Image (cartoon, rainbow, N blue to C red; front, side, top):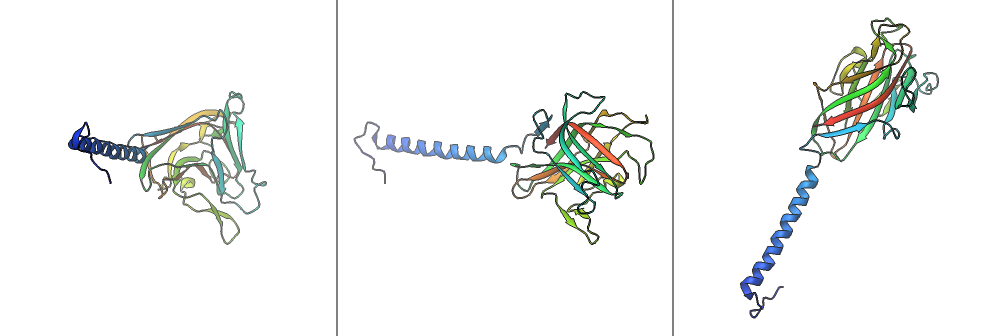
Length: 249
């Protein structure tokens, strides 16, 4: 209990006003700090730029739709690499590759994003620079090598389960093999670069800047974003990601 002394140089009213002023200032400060913490990355666009100069920057690989234990036969590869010839081999990139023996190989880069607003739907765009040697307007065994490239995500970790023929299947739905967008992936374009055969590796840009995809976070403010192909082309597809820009709004 605070005792106000009548003989204080401030008087009873002065002491009371001084104490009350401090209390009001404290409460306002707490409210401001709380509001700022809650609103981080919500009202303003949040942009993530990845150029892979120093490493993978927490991007990982996810492969699915292939038989258990056949990673070597399918030549599944994800590595921190340099761009291939004839491109600048001093430039770092993320390489992902697979040889599709099953006529149905799903390959993706993915990364967890957290500290977002919980249970919130974000409008998300992808802006990618990558190297591909896939030909355009070419026929391939099982399907065209000019695969659809998708960007999207889910609010739980991507995982595989086994079906009744002992193949890995993802815990989400992709329609990229049909060249279609769905609630998980937005088609960003295709990976074909030239009609020239054999096709040299060339840098291309693929994005959905004019057509964002809406993805909701979970209760912990988390999203796992993916950049993927779902191949029907029964041969090798290799991509090198030079830069990735992602915008949350």
